[in-house]
Length: 202
Image (cartoon, rainbow, N blue to C red; front, side, top):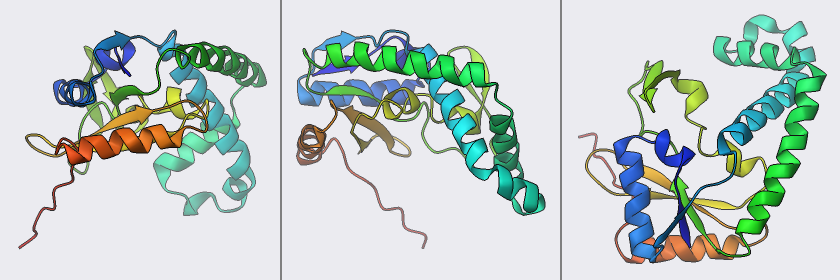
């Protein structure tokens, strides 16, 4: 096992980074590695999902524009207007990135990274500070999941207990090795590191 650093540490809040470190320590993952071009992979994932989402909903947008939630409507429209050249370049990067990550899985069975850069935010929050940058909240909560999901890797997100709200940690394995994700999550749960807290509304 190994903990992902670089991009995943740079854009993680102190809480998110601490959660991934705590999970790695519990699982005995002493090595730290970087995914090559993770930031470019995230950008490619964003372009692909935007373009495909826009194409999927374009006719409905034309017929029922006012019925869409405004933020989603804007993203679908932007996706529908994505140049074909951008989409094709993103798909080439996707193939290259998948091959590089497959090489990593010849050396490690599970990779550990934060699931989100911050824990749950108050309703109405629009911006967050990450890595010295001010970023839009809605588009940034998937910073760490998009480079993983768009190449088809199985993941279990384990809620790591700590002060304040729990924050998720991704337990990532090679394609078709969901069993390794669940085994790692079970170990975290048995150790009391991963658990959800029920907050009473009384």
